[in-house]
Length: 421
Image 1 (cartoon, rainbow, N blue to C red):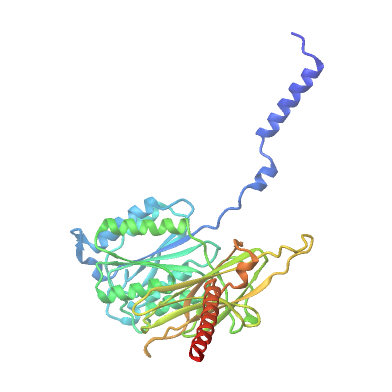
Image 2: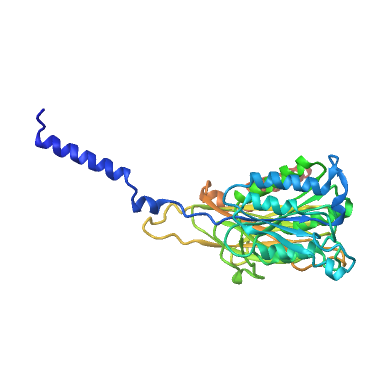
């Protein structure tokens, strides 16, 4: 068989192209997304004497916890750095000072060796006190370092026995550090006092509280929380609002966290280009006991203090979080020169709250605030924006008012004319 020179060149070129496509290249490697920071989870287990109680599916609370731990360790996703800390596991005596220091890192936070972790848990036996506050402080230190998410999962069957260190205040202090560490709590057959304390701890950091009565509930919930750490929602960025717009931080689209004192105003700024719509929402968590009749207000204003639009929400009674939002569309200028860069409008956002609390409740640190900012293409025309904040109903009201005034004048003139006749 005779192959022409042109055919040979074409075949060689095709083979060379195929070979290049099959070989890895530096460009392809450069397109790979960067590795995500490893999420960290510290499981904090109560090993106090009360864990001997046999009221969970016919077995002791300690046995139920061990069974749940084994199932959780088997189901932990790859890439999660997990640790185990105990409280009340080592000191059986009556000395408060010693008992309230009884917290220990049983398995250091890091890549999981399931066999080693299970072996460590198997050695535990109900022993001593319930130093929840010291254990949370130590667990926060366990999770230091790295840029991944951090989560503490606390499992206990009773309230803290190491007053005056209040674990709820400890949780608020941890939240105030701005490290976005979430504490989830699980109460094993809890009483009312335990339930209230664990709820307060969780709410202080944006976590969840779960009451557990059965073994499958415990293992299922802890597994769910560990999975949540592996695939977290957007982590808010810390932002410190100012007491006036001129000093406020400039925010871009994203989710931000802050702290706001009772009845305080905090300011933030956002630049909105012509043709964009600003969408902002705010949530304030009542992470402690508050009085009835509360409210949250979010206002968008110009830099000169003219209100553009506002959103508010109020309530009466117990609440965990209260939210409101605003939308402000800024229409594009149809006569604008395409070659000239458009000038943004600076919008001042004011977040206010009308919370108060009994005298016995601490007001510091402030209440947790989560602010969400988004900028999208504006769906409205310039004529719609002109009255934004007042609403089109104001035009109708103005027309009706003018019509009523005119009708009254005509009716009065006709009545006088009839009397004259």
